[in-house]
Image (cartoon, rainbow, N blue to C red):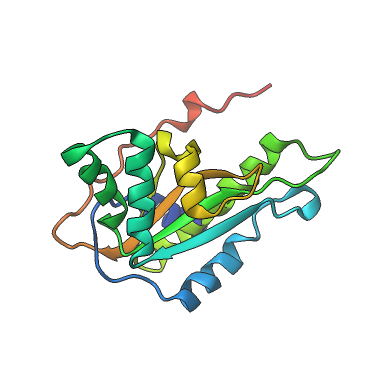
Length: 185
């Protein structure tokens, strides 16, 4: 008997897409996918995360903050400032830890990361190109201010989202020997 695993197949198809087109999901489509992504395992149901939808000129605000955080000037600063313009939609992923005696912050960060990862899978399955981008700037004061982060919050990165560029197909995933990473106790 052959079993069907549609979720497994979708995960195996997923690729990070560094280049995307100018199309992007609507706010309503994004909300629908976030609703599904929010079902990740979440000890005590704290929902220690939030997402920031960044479109249009707001991407330039983020770019200028990245350039300021990088301490670059001139052409180097301009190159840094252009980074968020690579996609029409950025989704800022924010760890927003909650006070809890049972759930340490590292576990709450895992939940926030899980939401971002599941959202990236859902966006990919919906036909959008996605890449989770991070960098040293995510923890800078300038970038935190540009995102309006509260005290204690941490930016985990951005999902860059846009249309799939048919001229820049990604390489097939290399085979993976799971047995090297799974051991029996």
